[in-house]
Image (tube, rainbow, N blue to C red; front, top):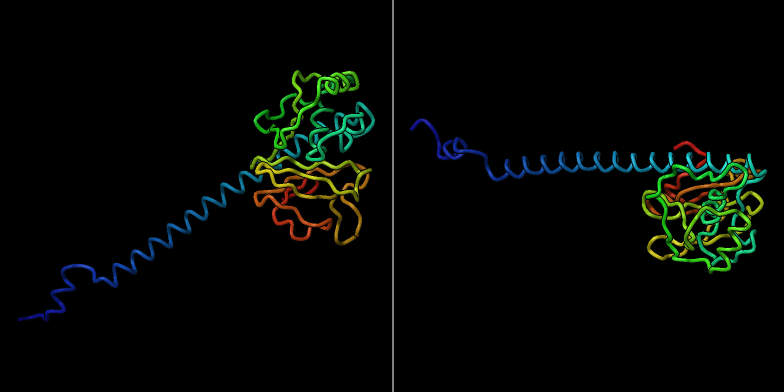
Length: 224
């Protein structure tokens, strides 16, 4: 014989150890590829949210240019008591639908991004009151919110309400307390004379007033 039994076994194919090594390498490469796909998808979603924030901010600026001020942080400013949740963004959408002063300003904002996460409604009397104050173009009694790509309402706070806490009810029903963000380097508020608008991001949480621990929040005044 010119070869050993071991040589004959090896000439027949891979050993079990070699197969396991190959399978492990394939699994690692597949995991890396999937990770890249997921990161790319998340990056695309975050870019879309940033675009929506910019688009909404542009409408808010148009409203302010016409009416002399930004939308308030709550419809309480118009004599309409809310349920205490998502009031900032609800008020923004209500204000942008005014027909006064060359409105409405909401035009082509993506309707698929609107929701009623906290399921609140206006009474007939409240609807009538809002229509008189804002010349409202809306035809239903729901207090809609503009949401991010993960279904959670955006957060809006007028500068005169910086320092106050507001409730945000997420899509899963959990209520968070949020407040306007400060620059940790200066101690002053971002956009001190305007407003703040942001998304909780994919992690659906928000940090303290300096943004500590907020993870992936997406702000209208910051580039990602």
